[in-house]
Image 1 (tube, helix red, strand yellow):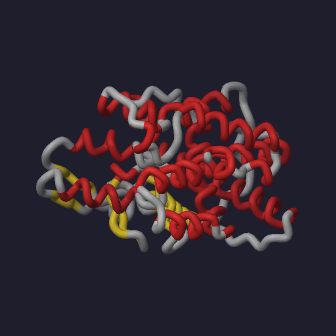
Image 2 (cartoon, rainbow, N blue to C red; image 1 turned 180 degrees about the horizontal axis):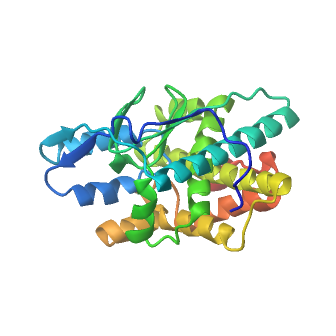
Length: 285
């Protein structure tokens, strides 16, 4: 992805070197990391993470402070550029639809972080908290995505994940997330899960939509970038995660969509460039 030399957002806070708490878990920390990758993209992944960590034995927290490495500094500049691209594109989309846009904040952290949605560790993966309207990312997630789940990796995998989380912020601004939570209160668990799937697939659609506009405006894509995004979407499908974790697939328990669905909706946003074609709720029911 071509990104050097373009605007960087000032809405990012980099906490990786300030107070990077490392949480050491008893009883199978690797298993927790693998399981919580399954929650990628959801608004409540960090709360699930807290619950699971409590069941895994005692925790020891070590606080440390260090300078960022040159690689981390460059990584932060890249993420700031991605954030700026999301801000610029979504401002334009909202203006075209007579809507008012408000930008979220992004926090990079290592180890663990406190949010308005509760505490979270690296095991939670990237997530958006509607309580403080902040996207939280520990960049170690992308190495896990590549080495444990077989995604291709690359810079556009990061772009896809950030755009997906930004999509959850868009859903908060549009009131979609609040409507889904309200509907889930009166539905069965299976029906509630279907609503969660639609919410997540719409965030994938928004990621594709952002990619469409960003390419049109900034010509950022390198060969293989879309494939990197699709590889990441494929790796975090409910069916792919369940096969790897438990050896079988339970469709009624899906909360994020299958690999095929996630790739389909990203592609639909990317190819259509039309905000109105992102009604995932109509198509999954």
